[in-house]
Image (cartoon, rainbow, N blue to C red):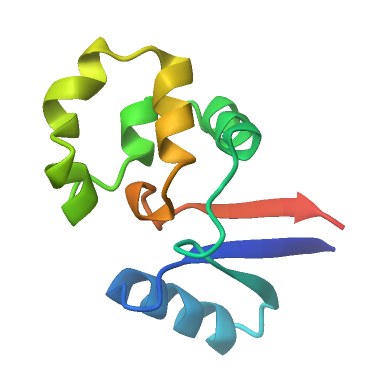
Length: 104
């Protein structure tokens, strides 16, 4: 059986909808508050490599921190490693639609 870890920000309406859906389907999960428990560089790197998505898709481009740091202009000049390290510094930079599944 697979265990789902949901990275969630309590005030995020998308997160709330995802949790409600999981509950309605009787799917058990581990809730991980993204603001208090940032993803690590190694976790982010693993998810990024498995996803096949551009790394930019892992950034919460709607978030205040993303805008305050002016990352729209800075990301193109940053290496992949620098971007992963930056994502790991603050969970609010990470798009909360990321759900990690792992075998238990």
